[in-house]
Length: 274
Image (tube, rainbow, N blue to C red):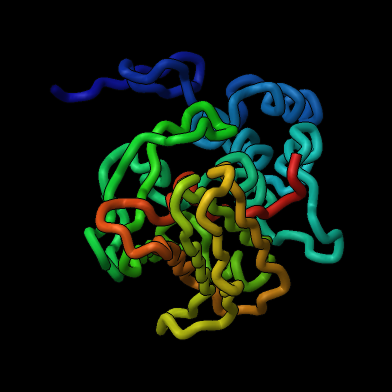
């Protein structure tokens, strides 16, 4: 169907458009810049980017201004972790703070082994079971279980594909926070291990967190424990995060008596934690 346009008092618009837009780029509704900015600050950010900035040149200038997004960050509590590292793109900083999330896929075993690559599948291999002890997060209902031979699995996170551009990573070097939850069975000794690496474009290791394996004796309280590490000041070039964890039991019992893992997490943290 051919689109029709009409002209009313110097304003051209499509009959399919929700509001008229001046072809000259002049404001549809002339407003002082401070008032217009205040209006935009009270609109959803996606609406400002996808709708408001397309209306006219004045609205686009306000929606694209660094001062607007800096003020939006201030009002919503997204603070710079290091005041000496000021982002060159406040809009990008705002959205990366707002969209901060766990980059690990399927961390709670809710979708079998989707997203994970099995590196070692010893003993009776990996298995998924319900949690034996309630996790501090009520949403965690399942965990991965190791066997009597070494079991390890990994995820490789491509930061560029997740929205973190090379220029942002190199210029800003946001903290990268990793965490993992692990628990033994009460009646069997076990070992837990983790290794997280920051990699460059060629997937060479730039930084690594690889603590000594953690051992649990037989007859323990089988409570959940959390491993946490934050990468800081790691330098330019980081493009991937490789997350590896696993373990085994120490009694060499057939079945699944080894360490349990769940709720693994990798987060890029551009601003201070709220």
